[in-house]
Amino acid sequence: MSVTIRSDQAEATLDQAGGAVTYRFLVKDRWRDVSYRAPWPFDYDGGLEGHLQGDFLCVPFGVPDLNADAAANYQHGYGADATWSVVSSSDRELVAEIPYPAASAIKACRRRVVCRDNRVEITDTIAARREVELPLGLHPIFSLPDEPGGMRLAAPASTAILTAPYRVDARSLLGDALSVEDLEHVRDLEGRTWDFTRLPLDAEIEELLQLVGVDDGRVELHDLGAGHTTTLTWDKRILPHCVLWVSNRGRQAEPWNGRNLCLGVEPVCAAFDLGVGPSLAGNPVRALGAPTSVQLHAEDPLVITHAIACAPAPADGGARNG
Image (cartoon, rainbow, N blue to C red):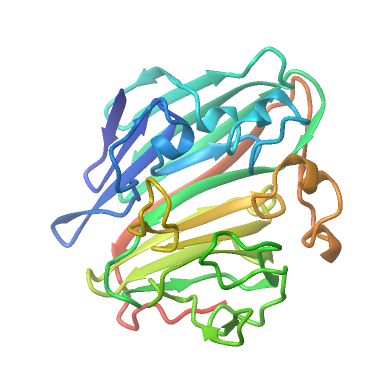
């Protein structure tokens, strides 16, 4: 079940499965759907992969960890998989919440979604039962055009850019937690150089990169063919890093079948998607002196805000590059 709200220029739909929010915007008299939805029939009993879409909260962020908090038994946390309840809604605003399992240190999460002009604003509140330290993150996923290089990514400057410390998939070309000079010149393990600011890539690959210590919580996606720019902004004081998930037709197994094309722009305080254990211990991000977990306090809810806007692209096609 889903609930939709809208303003004159923005529309947001919350799916109660995982609390995922998809959005579209009125740009140049045409509604532009910028959110990703998996290209397979949704199976709501199939876990997160079965209803993968949109923009969801990850408490905790990362792969399942059966040795950690009970909320970590699920991909990207209990809330990304379970059913949320819509507690209030109006034309332009809705509030949804989800109680966490009684064994979890997390008591509940709440999402407030507001459509305002050409922006969708999302406020997430995380309440803890007791003290706990966890990796946290947001997981907005955007659709990509079919044409190679049809989307220009403008990312903020950062302290470092790391490739994942492992091969993300059989067709991944990056790995080994290597330091990258900039997103325009990413060298793979076979010595080739890729420009990750122009997506999709002309290859069948699956990759993760992490921008460590961003200087601005702002990423712009310039759709060169459609002529619009989608802007994601977030509070980098809480989520100081950004994971880029480039799913470029690389995964061949069911239900992916080499057809998935999307970009995850994921503000985090975590070490890639390694999960609770590695994020609390030694990892390549923490080795740089950067935090990879957040301390949550009982009776002191943590509030995380982010927003998505869409407008006509600038005349220079979005030449900013961090």
